Amino acid sequence: MGSETPTAFFNKTYEEALALMVEAKEYIEWHEKDDGGLLLDLDRMRLSREAMRVTARLTQIMAWLFAQRAVFVGELTLAEAAREPYTLSGQEVCAPDDPGHVHGLPAKMVDLLDRSHRLYVRVSRLDQLVRREAR
Image 1 (cartoon, rainbow, N blue to C red):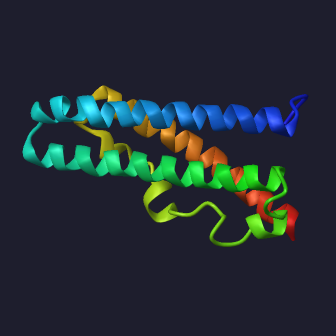
Image 2: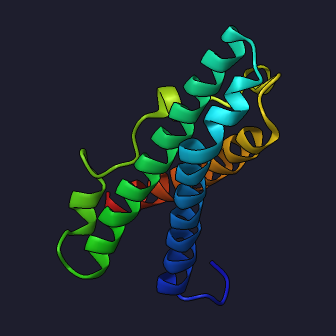
């Protein structure tokens, strides 16, 4: 983690995830309908599916970050946080990054998919690190 303290690193990751969650919420709430109206039925369905994928990724990330915060403040032990239900889950839905999924989708959704995937992968690595440290 370089010269950053674990708390600073955690806070940056938390702030990034929260900002991305707000951005995704605003897009889905206000713009997805507009963008979807310009798409064919199949592409509209894909847009909805990928919006759910972004939401799932961000929900899993935030849940994991809350568990890590609980460790930091002493509400959970590291060993507890390294076990279900506190570990990062949803890999079947959240981990895939198929470029074919984004073909024909609005640029904003493609951006949200990319950024949420990169964050999910990064948090997945952190989750694996926590699991190793807890052994």
